[in-house]
Length: 354
Image 1 (cartoon, rainbow, N blue to C red):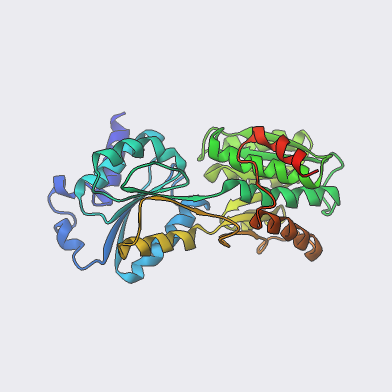
Image 2 (cartoon, rainbow, N blue to C red):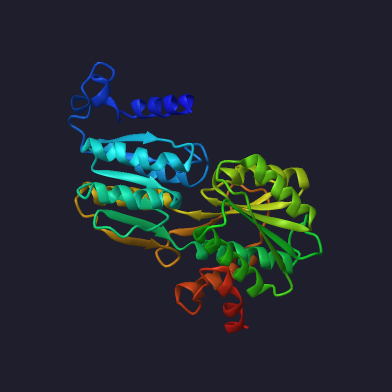
């Protein structure tokens, strides 16, 4: 416990959060060090940390791009969910941050408490919602990304379009946690698969962590052994373990958030790209300009912030099949399809669109 507390203190010192307690940081007073900056942002990653090749990295890329506009960014990387509240509070307590970015729905409970303690501090919560006058929520519609990849998977299986596909028509999903947002991905994924391929079966499993690739490998191994030949890795940093399994078990996989295809280019068919970098850069610019309001900003297919990324994969998907996937996405944009946001509603969606 003492080692853990010391480690957290070192992280906070590195971010400049404890400079007031430590006196000088690197020989400079913190206010002097930040003098001349157009804005200063605090950035609290999800537990997967930077280097997850997922939402943390994608979100940070968008905010980091603002450094060229003389924006200073201080980053901390929690190891556990229990770290969030202290890190949020320590950033806010300085009173020096134009905005504090909280990455991941896992920060929701902590921010509900901390935002009430600091009503003058602007927080940005990514991938969840807190209703407060000083919080801006930034959300994608996860079911749309799931639906994109589900339609693609269902059509590939139906047409037996890839050399490693078996005859079982079984498709897998590995989530980081059994939680509402992850299940939105799963609901869209399952709906897309069964809409285009009613003969398919969908297996869903959860890691229970976004930073345990070894466990994800074990779970994915079981799915492939059970007959799944395509598995969607929707598990943050844990998802890297699914790609390890895909290579070992000679199966296929999907990535998420950023283009993850180069992790296993012979086995990752594509990645569901949520353009966090562009969205977060836009949010940061609005914050600097004083134009960011409380409430929820929602993004998806209609806002042209979701894509299927095929680049970097050696798995060849035909242009005609890609075009067929696009026709289904057009029905989402036109609102002909109102996608299910939880697994219990998938059956009703399929019944409505027989």
